[in-house]
Amino acid sequence: MHPAKWFLPGAAVVISACSHQLPQDEMTFQREEAAIRQVLEDQQAAWNRGDIPAFMQGYWKSDELRFASGGTVAKGWQVTLDRYLKRYDSPEKMGKLSFTDLIVTQLSATDAMVFGRWKLIRESDTPNGLFTLHFRKISDEWVIVSDHTSSSDK
Image 1 (tube, helix red, strand yellow):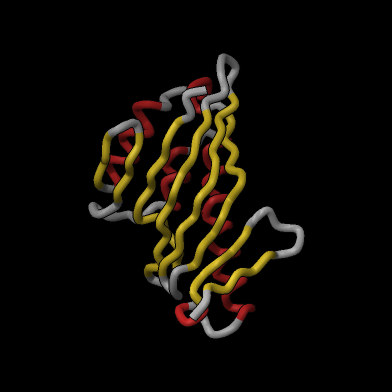
Image 2 (cartoon, one colour):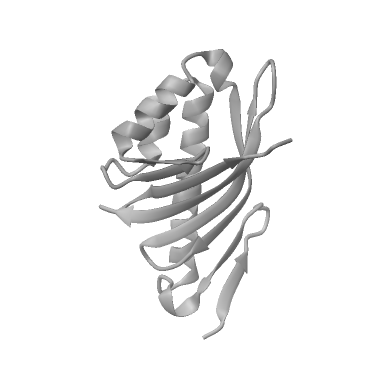
């Protein structure tokens, strides 16, 4: 089977997937994609109000969560939360977060990948980079089970 692609009008998102693994109808597929995007929107809003624990609600609350960044791999939800709290311990360090250029690829009814860009706008700088997120639908909710985030050298 050939991959199927959907281009949603007005959205900055291209969705592609193998059609034999997708939910049965396009409406269901669009609903699942919207739920995945909502997780990211909720994370962005939580970050921008300085609420790291709420930001972490988008991640799988498990010791099996995998977070790779800065040449290291952290394993576990609590470890990842602690890492964020230590690194971003002030509003100045947190800045304002934005996610852009999202590409959502639904692999099956319970697995999806999201590629995108992140940017922090802070008074002193604007760090940015790329991310790859593996989402899984667990207990009827989409959560990030693996996050690989990189920073731009620019």
